[in-house]
Image (cartoon, rainbow, N blue to C red; front, top):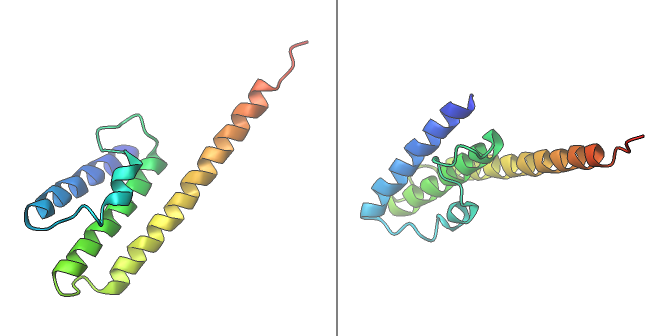
Length: 112
């Protein structure tokens, strides 16, 4: 998926969350997403960061629906989305570490 498509999906999920806020208390489930401080309007953020935010937000939304709608969606959906968020976080951390190493290698070059 392209970055602009991820941003559109991110925006859609934010709309879903806003819709759910009207009928449910959603603060507890969304703490992790709010801590990320990544919104669809942050277009300067990387594709990996938006992807991680999407998985975290999707997982939060599925938890809200599972809790409020007598178990729908099934718990395996909630668990699957949580697992995708964990994998995405590991990928994001790895990308940040790789970029840090590349930067360090480039700044350690001696000019002769």
